[in-house]
Length: 278
Picture 1: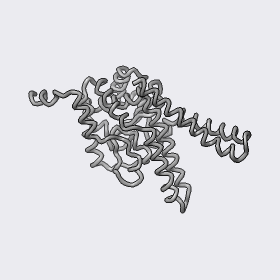
Picture 2: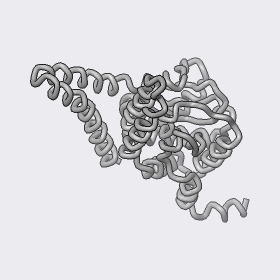
Picture 3: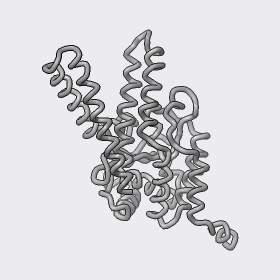
Picture 4: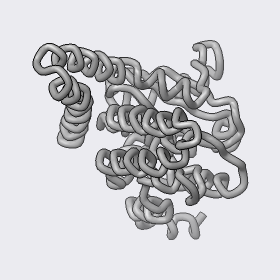
């Protein structure tokens, strides 16, 4: 886990340094050292803003609203209990108003993070399933996956939005910037991160089956409930809610849900025998 966290911090640092270099290079070419410093300062400012406020950008982009402590006290209690087991600071809680069951985490790591859950998830998931989903997101927080997720989504969404300023050239710009944003996301996000988060979630919940059952429920919901959001947010969710078509298909970074469920069940190989005995 420490190695994964260090690797994620290194990725984030390289990306932010890359943003600075991307800004500084035109300054050097256009005006030498003086303009380089000006452009580089702009790049540093942008990189600092992405690091400090990227989570707020993503939460705003998804329409998440902060959940007051007086609202849904049982959910606050669940998050606080699991966060203590995970060894991370209690994340801020946000709610998504729509009925599509889903959740995601953003932030900078164990000391500063936020978890967003939808009304659909709160209404559909059994307590053990909700525990599994929350624990999965806390595993991403502990490994600092959220830092890379947040930066990747912010920059990918920015590239996609830049295509919209092209007017009649919008389609051509999207044809160029969409794959560029996709390549950037795939470079940063490995499917293995989901398997690792699933294993940690199983330990936090003392059972892999709550999360496994939740994955089944969330995958079924993605086929039954309409969903609409920026395709750049696709890597965030516990289970991918997007159809594999259009530009959203470029941002698929998660392993098949069936593989994740099988690996979780394999953590408790005797579960079928106990189920038959019951």
